[in-house]
Length: 197
Ligand code: GRF
Image (tube, rainbow, N blue to C red; front, side, top):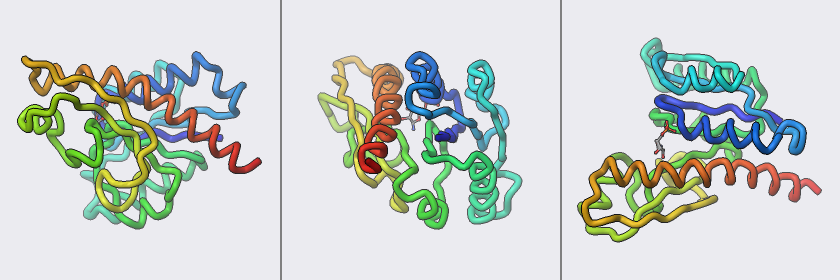
């Protein structure tokens, strides 16, 4: 079974999944492997990280496309080359078209740095601080056509501390993301196996 991970940036969540897959021997034990990492940004730091794990990488720049629809169609074709059971968004900073989301319904997941349903969209850390939240966190969820909605699969909570900035809070949340995202991916395949049994 193949996983394709989409990134746009540093790819630390992608690396956490790849590291866990390696450490826990997912290919042998679960028959699951990270088949490819695809970035919409040619300079995404995560591409080099993926290569270090021996994962195939691919770049598809959205700037080369006139519309969201044509970009998503090309992206879908690149993803389909790996016939994945699961597509993982890990810091992928593009909104996907309803057609794309529909194609992968039930097997497209994302991690969002807030305790959804609170703080969908951008600048989640600063908004949590500005609202005086005493806790913040992160959510792994199914992707649906509506941004940052979809069934919640996993969450982790962290405290918001008195002198937090968006950066210090983001770092605390990221540490938790690196724990729960690999767990959620593993659970996805475990539950799938149960439902097929
Ligand atoms: C994470 O905080 C994730 O929640 C958000 O973007 C960030 C990606 O970081 N969607 P990385 O590229 O995985 O390091």
